[in-house]
Length: 403
Ligand SMILES: Nc1ncnc2c1ncn2[C@@H]1O[C@H](COP(=O)(O)OP(=O)(O)OP(=O)(O)O)[C@@H](O)[C@H]1O
Image 1 (tube, rainbow, N blue to C red):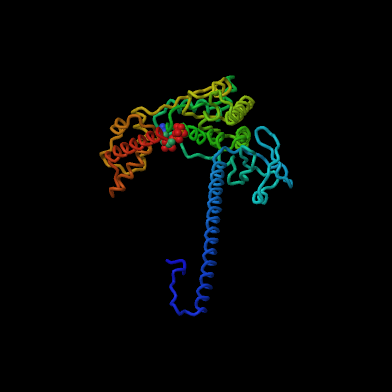
Image 2: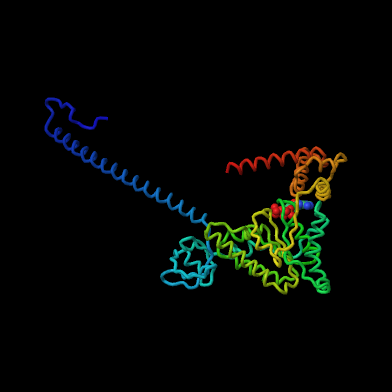
């Protein structure tokens, strides 16, 4: 493109008016050129501005993500003032004035529970949906598990019946003999061996309400609530007597003290102290029994095992060959099995399988038959299912190692 008209050669006899016209055009071109440059500069500025906004947006997104990831503390709103909200933190009862955004201001009222971050900014209001109590406590009026559904741990069932069922069913026996029934029973052993089933079966047998509390949820989700939730748990049990309280993963609340002094550790300690004080002060326990379970017995703080607390320890191991055979029988009760299926052979071939593994093998074997368009499940299906489950478990442990 030529951007000047300097080179245009005029005919010798060109009249002056044409020359003038050309000059005017030349001027206009110059003006347009400078306007064009100005616009280009504006565009560059706008781009730079846009980049700056983009970076800011990314930073805010990142902070937002971080805010959501870090642990949140629970507080109750005391008062809304022009300067912000006055909140009282659970756990340490300290009051603080914190600013609130206009959107949150519209949502929050005094007495509402809110989640705050490390710098005490309100991150969200805790409505019924996020109510921690509902999330960590599961109430089952009549669990549908019976002792006949549990295989391979006969001795453990007997022990639980004696220590939990008897005091609920025939408390007068203990009075007459003159001994106190064991306070709490601790079931320990590898995952998936039937600990939860056992606690449910006792509740079912005694017509007690089954109240399950997950230890890990209790301390990891909302810091500051643990001790209060433990109090709520025992209140709830009193309202539902007879009741069996089942605390799963108790190691999350009652792990040995470590040297670190993080707020998380202090919270775990407070939650455990509350649990111990509920158990110690439970003179007239009435018709409430406490069962706890753990896969990490080695991690437990010995304080919870003292007399009057979890003073009856019951180990629930993985089933042996005979146990696996019984568990296969239980979980295939409703299955359409081919004649070839031999439980003794399956039990032999599934060394190291837990009760939960055996249950998974049965379901997967059924899936193999369905994929093959058959309605009968064969011995081969069970063996293929076990091979598949072991492969998956290996993959899981490899990905955990490299995570
Ligand atoms: N001994 C068993 N007899 C029959 N089924 C079992 C047995 N153990 C486990 N199962 C099956 O595995 C499932 C999980 O078992 P359960 O939740 O009782 O294990 P758990 O020991 O409490 O495990 P975790 O420690 O992982 O909570 C049960 O619902 C049941 O189907």
